[in-house]
Image (cartoon, rainbow, N blue to C red; front, top):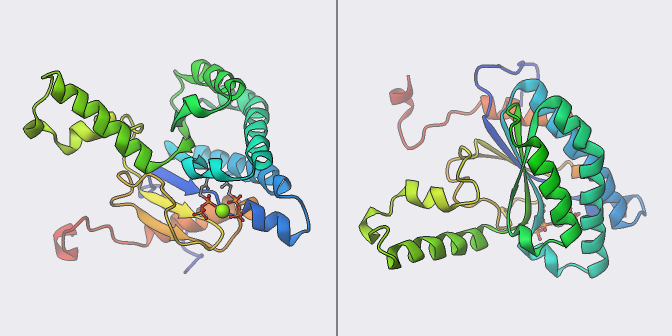
Length: 246
Ligand code: IPE
Ligand code: IPE
Ligand code: MG
């Protein structure tokens, strides 16, 4: 990849989603507890938020906890929940100052009450902000999101509010957690794993995928820039031919 080409402000992704992976391995490499990896990872999240603000990227979605992550040892789950509250408290002034709106996708009601309260407070205080929509995927799974969508639409059909024939992509989109967000343009996964792990399946249908070996706690603004630069060198054809795009 040619890192000498500067970022073009014209062709920036409008929605970046990140699978923040590798906290555990980062800690293990240093002989530390996994919790330390998660703690350091919150700084990388903060750095990614600031980098998006600087570039004027309006949507950033971070995969923070999957529906499958509940299967981890209780101690680790508790640590992650505690860290979430701690970093929300730490970042709140920055959210206000920088005009960030906090948004949550996932089964928020599965989270501990204390976490729900903290999240709701930040959501309420930032709901009119427009500089950056920061979405945290918490207890999120794309399959769970599909189930929710199918249930809600089935209810509408049952109550004669909609006919099966008028179910379109737009109708489905209205029922997703991400109903008010554009599709993902650039999906980044750190730590060398090349899989989606039940993240935003509908929304990444035409996303550009970018995998890096960098572990999440080591991921800095320069790595995000590199990912965006790589994105800008691709041709997004959306099914058309190159010639049609010119
Ligand atoms: C990502 O790091 C954080 C969460 C999934 C919550 P991991 O904890 O998955 O780190 P590795 O994959 O074990 O290194
Ligand atoms: C995906 O990472 C979930 C988050 C980053 C929150 P995992 O580490 O849980 O994914 P797998 O188990 O390696 O697929
Ligand atoms: Mg992992």
